[in-house]
Length: 221
Image 1 (tube, rainbow, N blue to C red):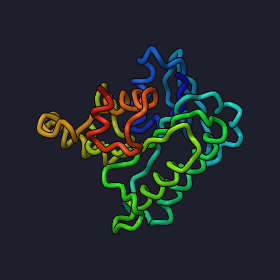
Image 2 (image 1 turned 90 degrees about the vertical axis):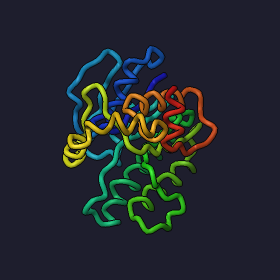
Image 3 (image 1 turned 45 degrees about the vertical axis):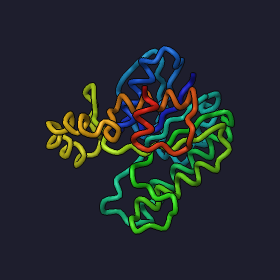
Image 4 (image 1 turned 45 degrees about the horizontal axis):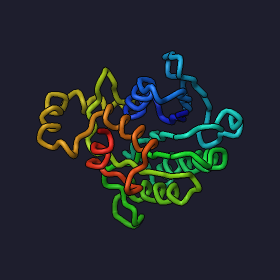
């Protein structure tokens, strides 16, 4: 399997990249992003672009992939709906549109979030925008598309969040995370489980297109 990975510098992306590189069934991984990862591996190649929404200059390098794992995202804290729409809906839909045209046999997996609003009419701005993004992706002509809505994620293997306030929050909550995992085993996933779930769903599919935390954990096994 040949995999495209967007957002490999983020917490979910780091975990997904690790699982892809460890998986003997993955032949190559191409990570696309705005900055370099700073790591090397025989399977890994990087494409650094100034604007992920505009992939026209690298289109020749984006064909021939079986799966795309898209975990680019930004916190909505302090952002207007227009700005959050640009970095969430506009960017994702533009990139996905290019990939659907180049790879019609691709499985596209988008990392959204618990509480995403599929109706696009709820009170929470971020949830509406995420819901609009999911709905647009599900209409695209991929072989299959799946929306992942993880809840609490425990970072493993030295992985950290790229967002400063997330790192601070995890530092405070770290002693409690193993307890949460034991108490809520179907709601709290690890970065390893999210990455394994993406690979398994890309290979085998899943009975429904939107996977909540419980589904992601089940798909990882």
